[in-house]
Amino acid sequence: GHSLTLPLDKDYISTSETMDKCLSVFRDWMFGTSWPECVTFAEPESIQLLYRRVIGRLSLIFESDRGFDRSEGDIGAEISAANEQNKKAGPNKTTKATKDIKAYTTHMDLCQKALTIFDSSLIRIKEGQITFDTDTWHFLLRVLIGIADR
Image (cartoon, rainbow, N blue to C red):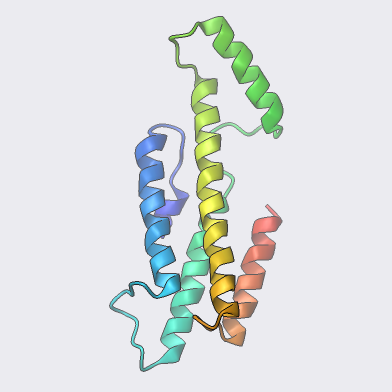
């Protein structure tokens, strides 16, 4: 789960592949297409505990510190500045700004995948394919509010 907290500044391609694989495992666990050995179906509480752990781990992808500079806070301005820097550097040069833009984009894609897992979970609950108990619902709501608050 902690692979979702890896920085995206240096080797963002292999890091994002690791994160993507982690998201796939969590998706499979949430949807019951594969289960870790620690889950016993005789105890519904262990399934709910698994759901809460997956939800908590998925929230880690939304941590804002990914190793790239966000001091300005305005991604649009940063992209414009990066494009200017790239023009000055020439067509065959890779600048830090270019790497930052790729890291931002990669991070946004990974966050979108996590949100899709949350969304698909809610659809499956509505369709009766999975069930959350009250504690799991409360935990999910707290996590989503925390994500929105970042």
